[in-house]
Image 1 (cartoon, rainbow, N blue to C red):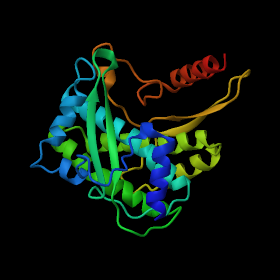
Image 2: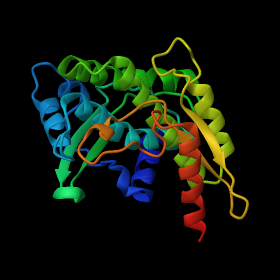
Image 3: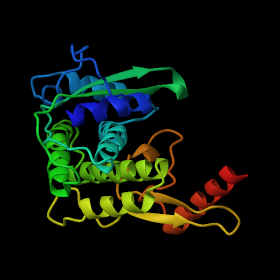
Image 4: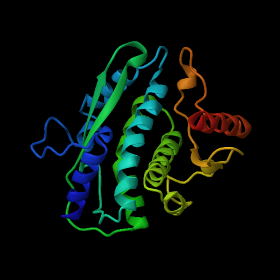
Length: 258
């Protein structure tokens, strides 16, 4: 099946994405069971996320948790879609996930392991189908996080959109197809009736005079880490002014080139 073959290839090329190819299960529960009200697994996820910085409250834990979750999953879905994989319809039943926390102090982090067990079928470059899958995967997680923390659903969906658009751009950067990747992300996230839609995220080209231009994604959501001890706005945070974002990104591009 092309889908599973593409997953195996992606797992070998980019092991940092956490794609688990162990068909025996290896302790990865379906996402649908993680978010079940009777399960305590999502509480553990939130507790582990809250250990990453001093002063993480429940809403910040929810925002940062889904930011990291979709940061990796967006990379995976973006790569599969842009490679022309025949994507079957996916739900929270078809994705098994485990969260692992490791490290101490500033080096502490959480990582996800993902394993897909989808039904057969699907089509390549099916924008509407991908949107349905993104919503079906993330919807139950967002609802569960909202119920536990009262961070608004809208705020959580904004972070999903950031992760998906960022994943598409990352594939484009790695495979010299940024224009195609940007175009597809914009088209996929353009449906004003879908929860993924928001008008604040965007792609921007940073083109200093003396170095090669680079594309970035400016966020439409906020992970709330600026509320923690020693926290500040991320470079591409929606709460940072456009002028500040551009200046910081320009400095980053120039440092990379030096």
